[in-house]
Image (cartoon, rainbow, N blue to C red; front, side, top):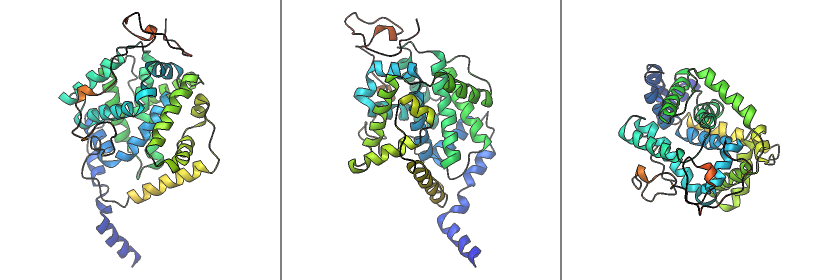
Length: 325
């Protein structure tokens, strides 16, 4: 009797169809078909999880002082944190939704490369940031997704972002999934350390996340976010760990959400470029052009950060870390 009721409930809720897209993914080749697999996984199977995971991935990159110092020097997070978040989400979403070699994908890469080439950025830092786009969503979904990722999805993410990295001019990219994961672990072990710019950019980002929620609950939101950062990140930011009960409660809530999502019918439309909560572009998703995304050229920054000279009236900025050379 119980089994019969469960079968009827599954039929009503569409649970039996929940794994239909997984069968499609498993029928594809994770290297040859990596763009299609990642799109199915990120846009249909786990859109909410990918977005949350990449938010934490960005937090993770700010634990590297050379990365946070450049971001502090540009002033973009101090003045336009929401736009920087929305632009990043849209540019990455364009690549996954349309493919990195599509017309929209190539235009997105031109915008991304144009921004990065203004500055003197260490290749290792670029490679590390790229690695977070591969492995942080995998770690998040394994903990909080409505199902675990398959090896097909893991490998597809690696091949996708490796191809993106090549098109960004990042050199010395590992050729294997495990090798790239080892690079990420080693880079964090070597480069995660406290710097005032880590704390500065971390605070801007934490304030941004909290601003998405009603004011009365923002202190709790901040504690939940902090509970999702590991000890190395908390130390690199000099953030105080939240009360001991917050982490278990937050993880329990996320796993409860995953169990409920598992009961829902499969998503029929992509969410990559259709987030109605986009806060920067009126009329989203039709209210922007790719060429308008990204930060404007810097006009007031220490010239030692730049790949090319800027006018002499530009002022220098205080920073814990200066670019190489």
